Image (cartoon, rainbow, N blue to C red; front, top):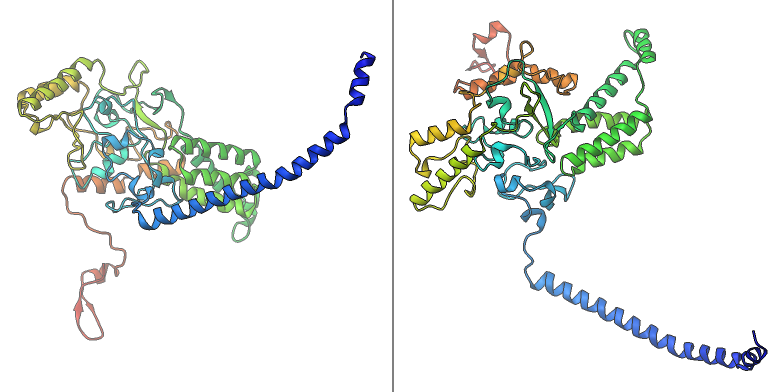
Length: 435
């Protein structure tokens, strides 16, 4: 550095500059601080007054936890995801709309690859004709493709595979079923490791042989629960269960309680929350998500319905009608479209080349012997298989569908002899046996 520069720098009055800067800062900072504080107080005052005026003087309407829920599960509603309705995730136990009797605590994932519904002909929940059976049948529609019951092309037993609702591609067993299988296996291990009482030596031997539910299992179960929550559209209860399992030490009493809670909780998500559906597989190994080679027939059908509706002066068609619970029938076109019976039958025959004359009955599949479905092959855990092949409930459903008399079971009754007699009370009055 040249000497003249050093001399020039040395002549600068650094002390006076620093002193003047400090004095200016001391004069300016209190003013800036007071101005900022005044602005903050003014904003808070404005916000408080505005809140009082808006909340007390202006009607705000009902909260989103009520208004954001649908009033019915029609086609437009089911085309949206769970996150579109704030009330489903507003609390662990969501509220239902005021016009809805039952609590709407689960959601049915939309299926964009079911040709039966995306063609505009059928509603996502298509069964509404029989009031006694439609809820039971629509429960199947939330986890199975229509062709499992309505396609007539497969040898028995049926060959089924899961397909992803987001991509339409084949996939493995849903994470929800894998998680439930792990929980059941862990519960069986806990039972095998029990001690005390009759057979204590045998149970202790089984305890040594049975594998423990260790940290690796807990981590895998947590991942499966997170996958299941994502597949269901963000189920809060599944996420909370996964979070608790990640925070608890395996083998502890708290973990046993969590596994017991999971054993009760997971089956509540078996209806429409797999993120996948079962579909039949043809002889070439292809998934059948609709009647093959019927695109032209579908277009002719929809055009015929549209023309008939226009002739009748009603701008309605299967693609733009508001489908209500009583209208979402499983066969279209409806009689109000103006199509003749012959034209209607011809169009339907072209659209449904694989359709069975009668859908499969409950006990075709839900039976322990000669069932059309191998439930183990599609990933169902053992106890779940046992429940699905027990025909008692399903025979009852068939009886209801056929209009047969339905009698409630006798939970309380006398022995066989007293059934045929009257029961005498202390007042000598005759009454029927309790049922």
